[in-house]
Each structure stands twice: as C-alpha cells, then as structure tokens.
Length: 368
Image 1 (cartoon, rainbow, N blue to C red):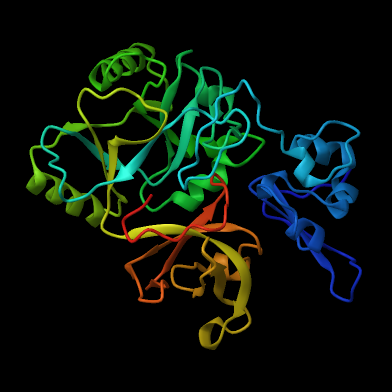
Image 2 (cartoon, one colour):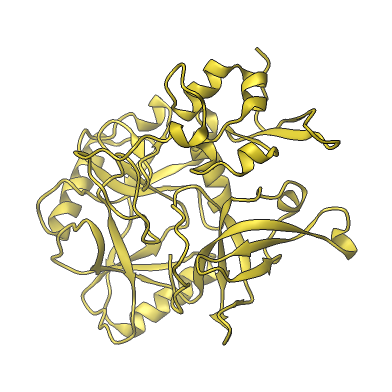
C-alpha cells in the first residue's frame, strides 16, 4: 500500500477543479478536503476517505485509534472519558480527555507575592510529559511514542517533566515527539524531571526521591531539572532577565513544603515578561512584497471570538506550508488593546496538547 514519507505530500482529485493535498508532517497526516478540515478533535486523530484510499482503511483506523470496522468518522475515534480514570483540566482550563494524567498546573506570579525561600527554576519551552512508569502521556492523555532506548533506565513510578530540545526549539520538539514511529530524531530530546506526582511527601521529599533514583539509574536521556532557592524579589528579577536574555521563556516558582495537587494551584507560579495565549486558525492571508506568492499572515480567532492577523514570527517554512484552518497555535504579545486585541502578536508554534473551548477571553497577564 502506498504511503507518504515524513515531509512528503501528494495531490488527489477532489470534487471541484482544485485537487486536495495530502501531507505527512512528523507522522501527522492531513488532507485539505473539507471533511478533514471540519472534523473535530485533535488533528492527529482526524482522517478522511482520501487518506484511507491512499494508506488503506485498516492502517488509517489503527493510526487514529479507531477499532477495526468502525465507520471512520474522526470524532468517533476519540475515546470517551473513562468514569474511573482520572480527569483534570488542560492548562487553558478545558477538560482533558480519557486517561488524562492528574497534573499540577501553575497560576501566574503576582508582584505582591514574596518569592523569598521559594524554589526557582527555568521555565522550559518544551512539551509537558507525564511518565506513568511505562510510557509518556500528554496533558490531554495522548501517548508520546518514545523509543525503548529513550525510556531505558526510567523508574517504574510516575514522573512529571518536560520533553525538551533546547531554548527556542519548541516547534522542533513538537515535530519529534508527535511522531508515531519513534525514530532517531528522539536523540535530540531530553526528559527533564521536575516532580514525582505519586510520592506522598512535600516538594523537598519528592525532589530527594526522584533525584536519588535518577542518580542511581542514570538513564541516558533523562535528568533532574535544576532548582535553586530564591533569595528575594531582586534575585527573581535578575534570574528572569538572565534566562530571557538566553532565549528562555521565564521562570517557575514552587512553594517550599508544598504537596503535589491536581489542577491549578497557587503553590506553583510562572514568571514571564511577555504574555501568551492560544488562538485557532480561521484563514490565510496572502502575502505581498517579499512574501508575494506565499502566506502573509494567519487569520486567527481567540476563544472569545476576537479575530486578528498573525504574521510576525512565521518562518519561511511556515509561510510555504502554513498551519491548516482549525489548527490551534500559540502566540506571544505585549498587551491587549482597549478593544481586546493582542498588540504586537508573534507566532510561536502549533499546539497539539490543548483542548479548545470557545468563550473565555485572554488574560491580561503572563500565561503559559
């Protein structure tokens, strides 16, 4: 059965004069047909008759997690939430799917909080990953198919951390961890551990626990993320400026003596200079000048319905092969205008690990 190699695309005849384009990007297959674009759910759980015809129906249903013989509607391929399984909220407040891990989520740091004595670490611009003792799971319960050699040496107890390739490498990291075939690209990634959710002790006890196990086991691709005690607001600002100057996202603060709570907690705070949020792509704006003949800007929509153009921050590759309509993207901005429109927005990357629920407005604060 024919297939698409990573990065390849093919055109097939559609119902109109313009052909449909089928693509494989990092193991995520897409089609430009209306059935694929208008399907609900994560983009890696969508399929259509054109992909089935190209790859084979059985192969496609297996890829999206649908049982053999299923009708194949992408929405039916997404399992319903288990009554017994843990539920939590995704970082933007949306309910997570089946087997979503019970994660601790952060609030935004406010200047009236005295950070003295809190544990401080760099906020990693990677992909949040929950190690359940056997595999990596995303915030929404999707499995990351890491090779066995990558997970070798990890303990059988739960770990909370980040799959990270380096600063300013978020999109490259996503393209690797979203692959469903594992592969040598995972050698670029490291799993940086910052908690052990299943341990009953306070944060200091949990750190001793996972530090000790990682030092004993010495896994080749995992290590403990560095924390230090913050000595005060001046120390916090100096470290924030240092990290941001290196291209980092910001800082995280963990209250000393705190337990691991499921959901958003004031024991974990994120500290950033810029704000960020998610938006959904609703259209493409043609480029002019040096961008003539390719994408000029993404037309995006916030959860509260506010629409604007997002052109800054797009790479040449993004402009040549832009995110399809319906994709959720992350962007940074300085502030909101009086009309609620983000000022000086800049594209960061595509998000696969957040759910989309319309209705909420962007916070006028730093947000992960």
